[in-house]
Every structure is written in C-alpha cells, then in structure tokens.
Image (cartoon, rainbow, N blue to C red; front, side):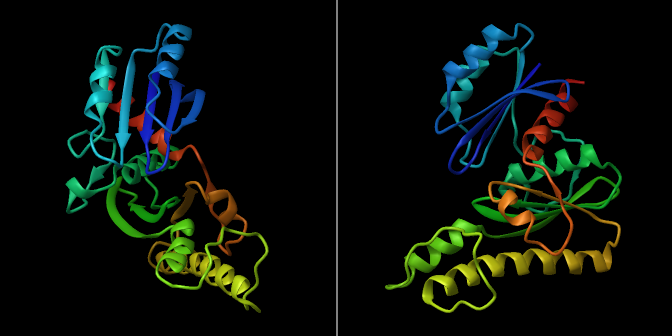
Amino acid sequence: MNLIIDIGNTQTKYALFDNEEMLEFCVSQFQDVALIEEWQNKYARLSAAIVSSVQGKPNDFLYILRSKFSRLIFFDQNTPTPLENLYESKETLGYDRLAACVGANAICPHVNLLVIDAGTAMTFDFVSAENQYLGGTISPGLSMRFKALNTFTKKLPLLEKSDSFDLIGKNTIQAITSGVQNSMLFEIDTYINQLKEKYPDARIFLTGGDSNFISSKLNNKVFLSNELLLSGLNSILNYNNS
C-alpha cells in the first residue's frame, strides 16, 4: 500500500492507494504527521510513500517520514518515471505537472495527450504517443487573474468566480467577471483547437481546483479527473518499486 503526499501552493493533499485504488483522501493546510500515523495504524501493509512539493524539498518532514516508511521517494528531476522527460530545464519543472501527465498516460497509454491543470497557475502539458513528456505552457490561474486586477490597479475590486457572466459586461463587476473568466475559457479552447490541428487524435484531460467550474463552460470536450496528480504519483511510486 502506498501513501501519496502532494504539497501544493496553498494546501497539502494526502491519499492512500492499494494498487490503483484510492482508499483514503484528505486535504490539510499543514504537514499532518498525526494523520499519517492514524493511517499506518489502520493499514498494516502501508509501507511505501512518495512526496511531491512545489515549495522545495521539505527536509524536516522527510526526516520524520524516513523513520516511518521502508520505502520513501521525494519526487524530483532524478526520479525515474514511466515517461521520457524531454523538458530542457528539468531542475525548474514543477513536478506536479509531470506527475499529472503520468496519471493521464496510465489511463491512455501510447496516445497523444494534453493535460490542463486549472489551479493556482494554469498549465498545459503535452505527452506524445511515444510516451515522451515534451513540455507545455504556464499562465495565471483564475484566482490569480482576479487578484492581479485588484493588486495592480487602484480602484478595481477583488472578485471571485461566478457562474453568472456574459460576453459583454454592463458594469465594472460584470466586466471584470466576463474578462477574467472568458479570457481563461478562450485561452483553453483556442489552445485545444490549435493543438488538434497538429494532433487531431489528442485526448484532453482537465484537472485542478477550478476544473469542475471550467469544464462545463468549454466548447471542447475534455476528460475531467481531479485525481490525476495523485494517481500519477502512485504510478511513479509503483514504477520505482517494481
């Protein structure tokens, strides 16, 4: 059994897998050793763990985990994965991006894949049918776009996403909501359309904190999966254990 820990920009996710099945899931604002010990007491076969972090290497946390797990991996540029990583600056790659691609590839192997992660930042990542990770793009996520307008202007208010918005905003609140949300939707749909001109058979995956909000508003069909990153980390751990 595997413990998966994903330390993100704003929260830490914990998941417990038995082979490919997720048995437990929890979100915390901190590194929750008590939760890990609770799961170890509940599941005697829990012996392997993998940690991914966008905040750098959590050395103190890893020191604690090493005393609790016979097999522990900190996911970085030196970790073998089922994908060939062709990214030119591997040391600067956000490994949540690569892990999500591994998760998508496990679902659809040997197929051209686009993985869109709509989180704090929005990332587009491409995996070829030859199981090669080629890279992608990074742009501001939905909340970051709202915050940027508020932070870098004197009068524009800080807003949050809303299901009520039109193409033309008739007041400042509507204009901000329309501008931020439509710009993100246009960006996603345009990117997919251009990619499909070159790779018409590409499968499109959508994940991340805003994926549920976005998916129904797109013109393109996407495969929605909020567990892509965690399942990808589980696949990487299994790959290294085999």
